[in-house]
Length: 433
Ligand SMILES: Cc1cc2nc3c(=O)[nH]c(=O)nc-3n(C[C@H](O)[C@H](O)[C@H](O)COP(=O)(O)OP(=O)(O)OC[C@H]3O[C@@H](n4cnc5c(N)ncnc54)[C@H](O)[C@@H]3O)c2cc1C
Image 1: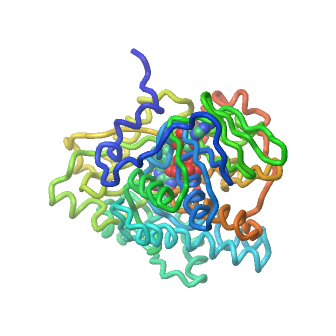
Image 2: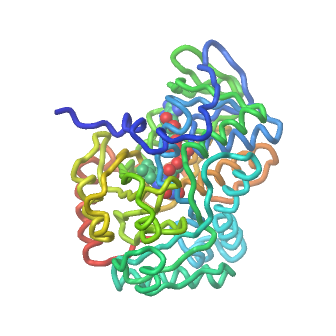
């Protein structure tokens, strides 16, 4: 039997099958075109960049290989979580007091930025702001997340520190050792959010071309020319925002990230008794495991749980079984409840656990790899890029050379081994941020 393709699982997702925002009306790039900026990739990074560029009077043109939200942006868990995987103290240590503090503000306000955009553009994506719980899967991990929570507390965030009973009261499971709740976070329907950003970008004057994979980016005089199969577009600046779906457009870019498959399953709509008991009130949760489970109730009342842990584009039945097992371990009362949807997508990971921003040549940027936290961060990065181009502001987030992972060519066996290693570390209770 042929393996199920992660790429094509898109149309099996809850999001695809339950949308409020209509798909935007776009064209396919044909023949020659001109723009101020070509954005490659129609996910949150590319769409936020296009929206903010167009609002500031530039003419961006987005090239999307398939359709808006086809990548991680239209498939994710919809958890809007502020912050990086690095803590406030790490940022001050790495970048000094002033720049560190600016970065803390930037990433700490990331969820505000998403909810403000939704409000401003009236995006119908079921936004809910009920907080995020980071739950410790071991006593060891609990110490580490409490340390993180106290750092945000010191930054003035009204975090809640939770013991085992506290988490159980808020989620319905006593499967965690403790954790913290971040009130800045929330949830949304991600495909609708992507479509809403596209609608707003179009209204502000951006051009969006779907079914238009970029095949080549080449210098053209003092500009760049981006070629598709049936057209090309010339512009002064290009932003590559292809994340876990990055191909060969920019040398070494694909070799700088580890695309890992993340899978989600949802139950049928739960009866009211279970909706009141399991992840009630809109709270979302993710765990401290490296191969973490994340979960919430969907806006239409299903339990949904996701987790990472497969390499390549073929879906792994073992990952689905692990999700089912995890779900029943945490919430035994879901035994016998039918599953309605399962799908998967690619998360881009980096060795340092941080998003990467590169400028391989003047006028050419790449932004990618939010390490599973891109709903809020990708939105912010797109805005940063637009402000950099239009206002000449230096990019607050560090611009680094593209790192080439020497063993990338044999990444599949290496990552399979790495995934086994993480399963082992998780089972021993080590914390991951
Ligand atoms: C299953 C899953 C669950 C997740 N859950 C969460 C969560 O709950 N919270 C959170 O914060 N983050 C989550 N993430 C991560 C988050 O979705 C991503 O970080 C974010 O969507 C990245 O956005 P992006 O625009 O950078 O990339 P993507 O949304 O991946 O978009 C890249 C786009 O580039 C296009 N593309 C690629 N090559 C070309 C080309 N040559 N020409 C034109 N277009 C091209 C692709 O078709 C794709 O649409 C999850 C990811 C997955 C897969």
